[in-house]
Image 1 (cartoon, rainbow, N blue to C red):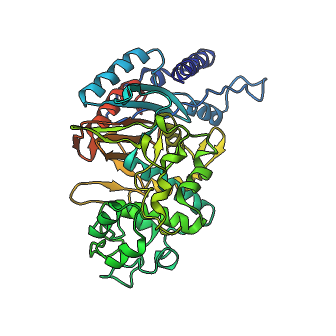
Image 2: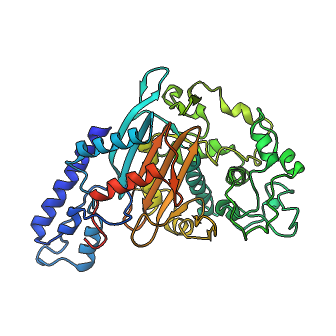
Image 3: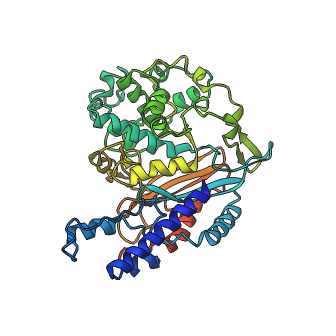
Length: 443
């Protein structure tokens, strides 16, 4: 896989050089990759397309056509520098005490860089490879939000509908019984639901208890008015899985498989049994050793026998198992126009809806869109978008630039969890290194 990416990237760069020579246009800014404060990593670079002028008698290009052609050009200088980048990534992984990890870079619809490091399973001596599937923790939330927005596109889900009407009658805050709780609030962490005592007990009980029991106990509300206060909650984003089940009438992980993973030929899933080869799921490690080994877990679907379809409150918040390459392809959809390989997955209108800052936490400065985070300070002007994850000792990240349509994926199974200004330091370090290989906005 990695060699194919390198060959395709090199071929794309050669095509760009041919275009530049034939057009006698100075596009040096596209290739110099001048360092810019806050440019994130690349997004999949699409194949370079060159079209002959429809009017062969006219030598001058239509300005609109030339602008569209320029938009297709890659803006990275990764080709030819892979060995140097590989060495830097290995150094960063060692610096952050990573046992095993992968980095993928994408630009304009294609994965342009892929690198693996270390062990996916120390006990079995397995190395991280193209086939390794990582549990990506809260990065799953961005994919869950994408799945919900697809239903909005199809006219099946209204993000502002009262959830007590179709998910559970008791989904109303006891402090504000007349104020509806909505899917939009779940996606912005403003529903007033919290990861309270009732939720903590529920997720520690196998099989998991019903949503009825959690809401009956009631210790999952902040007391704030729904829609007015940001409080990060796994319970809320997990409940978005139940919203999707209520609308589709099927298990959330089955819907995700049918709607996204199978059509894109991804070996991924929100339960381990959806991964074709469970032995390829990376184990996770903390400072004291092994923390979780999903490859030997029994079928996870059995754990939800007490949770009726339509009342799921787990999975969507952090249980996606996927490779770096396939997560980068999802990144292409989110950072681009909603298409991948010529297939439209979601409309641009829905993507624009996801990528707006709806709430900012006064204390931390955390900015939230719909299921995604806006990252300030990684780019000179504007925001980068995506999500990060942290669980069982691992760190993950999907961060992208929607203006330039590129981004990066960092997946680990063990990592030093230092964090500043809402960004994990390993993710920040990868952004900093890769921006050297991308042009500046002025280039």
